[in-house]
Image (cartoon, rainbow, N blue to C red; front, side, top):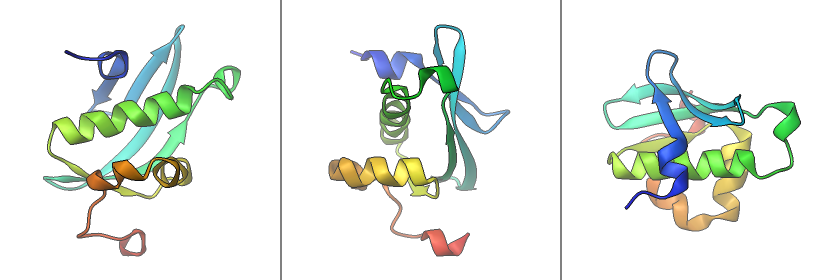
Length: 104
């Protein structure tokens, strides 16, 4: 059964970003494909009118769920994603051990 985060998160492969539509406002996590199994998450952007309402955290949580379900790994280059991972250390399981931020 899918939860709400998974249903709302869309991987826009053409724009290299994960998208979450909240009341017609788009929040995104931009990524670069590193290899067939790894995505570098480079930037998170939430509409200013939605900041402070947990939208960014919901977006990152949904992205991490997507990553795990598709047997992918991430390199957290985005400061927001890095902070999220520090606050939710259980998600370290999707962080790549083959790459570091210094590789980029």
